Image (cartoon, rainbow, N blue to C red):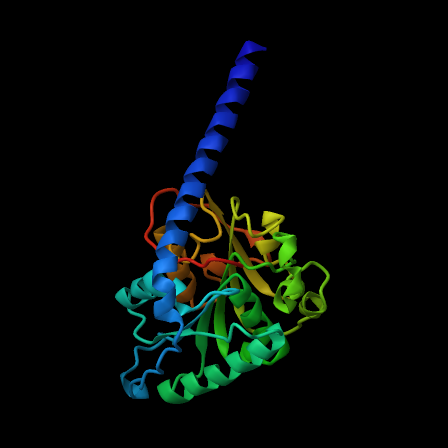
Length: 286
C-alpha cells in the first residue's frame, strides 16, 4: 500500500511540474508575441515568386494561416525554420479581425491560393493553420474544392470537433462557429469522398484552448488524416516550438500518402515530446 501511495504521489508531482513548466512557457511566449504583434498587423506584400523552371521539384509554396484575433506575426519562428530547410516560397496570410464568418475567410483563402499558384507556376500548395486558421483551411479544402489545390494541410491546435473553452467569448460569431455542433462543424462532418488532400493534425495534451483536448484530433472516415499527439506544451507554443516545427517539415516533405507521417485515417502516430524552451511568436487565442 505504501509503495502504491508513493507511486501515485510521484506521478501527481510529475504532472504538476509539467503543467507548471508548460504554463510558464505559455506566459513567456504570450509576452513575446505581444511585442511582435504590431509587426504583423499590415498584410504581407506578395512575393514576386521565381520562374517555374527554377523551382525545386516538389517544393510547393507554403501558406501560413493564423488563429482567432491573431495575425501573421505568430509564424515568425516557423517561417524562419521552413525557409532554412529549403522552402523558398512561404507566405503568411492575414484575414480581417472584423471577419464574422469562417466561410467568408475560406473564400478569401481560395483567392489567395489562386494568386500564389499563378505567381509561382506551381499547381499545388501546402497550408499550415494554427487553431481557427486550420479550420478555415479545412473548410476551403472540403467544401470549396481546395483539395485539388492543397497537397498537405497541417493543423496546429485546431478545434476539429469544436471547443467549449472560454464560454464568455460566445458573443463573437467566429467563436460560436467553433462550438461543438455548429452549422460549420456539421458541414465539415458530412461525407467527403474522394478528398485528395492529406491532413496532419498536431494536438497537445496541455492545450487549454481545446476543451476537451482531443477535439484537436481530426477523425473523419473519408479523410486521410494523421494525428500527432504533442506532450508537455500548450496552445500558444504549437506554432513556435522546435519539435513541432520539425514535425511540420516532415509532414510537408512526405509526398506520398503511404509515407509514415500520413499513413492512417485519424489514428495517432508516435507522440511528439515537446518539453523545453522556445522563443516568442505564438498566438494569443484560438
